[in-house]
Image 1 (tube, one colour):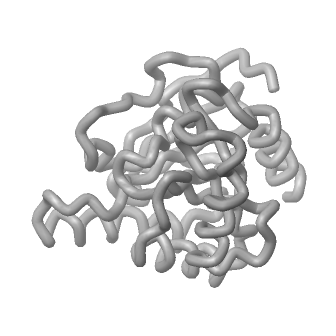
Image 2 (image 1 turned 135 degrees about the vertical axis):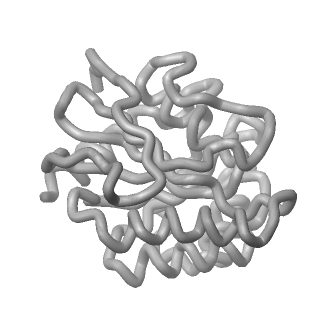
Length: 196
């Protein structure tokens, strides 16, 4: 997909700060440091639109990215970062939940997991939430360039079993560095936007 204009439109911590229009939104959720910002940058062919950091837990806000005034990508705070206080974690959880529970523009939630590691209990909780709200349950398995293609199926099976994903086709290996499956992710996103 050819993206002409992509910009960080709004940074929010509560519903009063969300953009007030009817643009459809696709949200990305995942553990801290799973590569949400890198994914957004690579899909949009931008280097630093979404700020990436070597330090997990950096995204503490909901970041709304306007794509050609047609739809938005929404980057939610990463969960599961151990080195923050319980109070801080609860605050992030509230920020994520308020958005997911109240946002009418939201058409799909895509979960990111690191292809190299078995998903955590928090990943499972998030996946169950996504399914409870009747989203498709699409999982992008990031950092796919870090393992050989011959090992993809083994790792996909681990993710499928842990998260109880109905169909392995819903799990897409992806690499922000080498753009593995970039077209496939875009095709999936276009399908979601056209569903509504």
